[in-house]
Amino acid sequence: MSAFSGVQAGLPRSPQAIDFGALIVARAWKFDGNPHWVVPGFYLGHDEYGHWLHQPAGSLVARPGTAHLAATNALCLIPHRGDWVATMYAEAGEDFDVYVDLSANIGWLQMKRGSWEVNSIDLDLDVIRSRSQGTFLDDEDEFAEHSLSMGYPQKLQASIRETSEELLESVAQNAAPFNHSHRELWLAKVADLPTA
Image 1 (cartoon, rainbow, N blue to C red):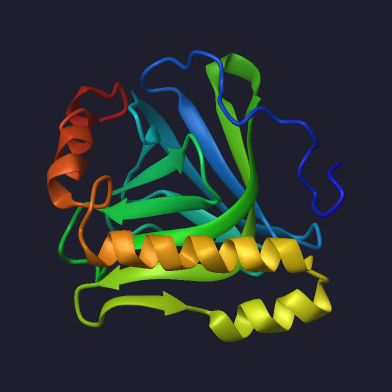
Image 2 (cartoon, one colour):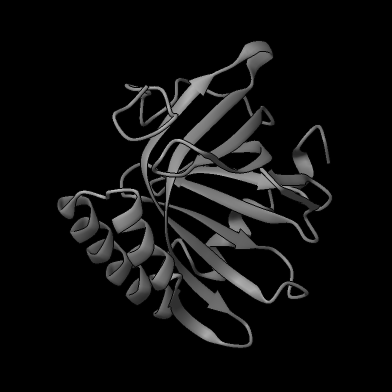
C-alpha cells in the first residue's frame, strides 16, 4: 500500500497495451485510504492527452453509502501526466459539460480476462464547466477541511492548488482536450464498441 492511500504502491502511470473495448474500472480513493467512487467504462484508445474511456448511460456509479445509474453517456480521460482525471459529458441533458477531479497517485492495474483498473486518490477540488453556471472551482471547503483532518502534506496542497488554477484556465478557454471538437473524435469511436 502507498503511504497515504488504499491504492497499491508502484502502479504504473501508463498501462501496457489495452484492447479496444476492454472493461476499465475507474476506482477513486480518499487520502485516508477509504474507498470513494467506482465507475466502469470501456477502452477507446489513447492520444497525446491520455487514455480515453466510454462510460455509458445506465452504468452503475457507486461509492460506500450511495449509488446511482449514470443518466447520460460520458467520456473519461486519464491523462499521461498531471494530477487529475476528467469526465466529459456527451449530452446536453446533463448540466455538467466538463468535470475534472483533482487527483494524485494515478496508476493502472491489470485484472483478469483483459480488463483493467485505474486507481487514483481524489483530492476534493473539482474544476467544473456547467451549462448553467459557467466554469468554476468546487469543493474548496472540503479541500481545506481534509487538508487538516487527513494531513495532506504542504507540498501536495501547493501542487494541487497550482494544477487546479491551470485547469481552470484551460477549461474556461475551451482548450483541447476539453473542447467539444476533440471530444467528438472519441465519441465517434463509441459506435464500434462491441458493447454498443
